[in-house]
Image 1 (cartoon, rainbow, N blue to C red):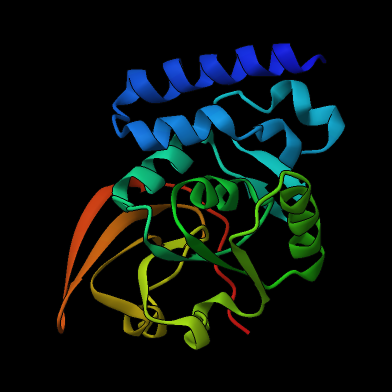
Image 2: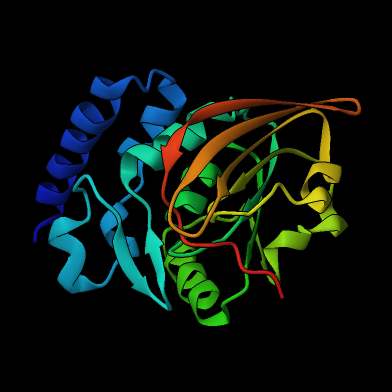
Length: 211
């Protein structure tokens, strides 16, 4: 497919899957307009890259439905000066969205082959504000803490205490929490020792694996 066709499909995605479903943050919409989602999937999947559903990326992982990526990103209320921790690099698509919006992104992936593949694409796209870690995401990345925001792209049984401890005061975290098949998406706001929770609705993510 020609790049002009991918651009048209991307514009259609932003309008119908995001704007029409309540995504209002202009910086979020602009990031999704710029990032070529088709670059993060295998060539045979590229014609479907902008469709309203997740796609497999190997190793039992997926690139999430575009609307869910937008919902999670908007909920973080990101500022350009933020430092963000992403748990679960996966394809690298969400990483690219974050890198478009903030100064510094630290991204963790436990599956080395996925991390390497994502980094290759992100490097080719020219991102220079991303730091890569291959590790167990449930432990976070204390070396670069604290973070203004943490985004978790896999489902946890409960909110990992290490991640809460690595948030700045007034920091935000978005994380799916629940069982193996169905979860609720939560926005966590840290205020001192208090962690306010807001349920953003039901979702389905692959599990966050510890160890």
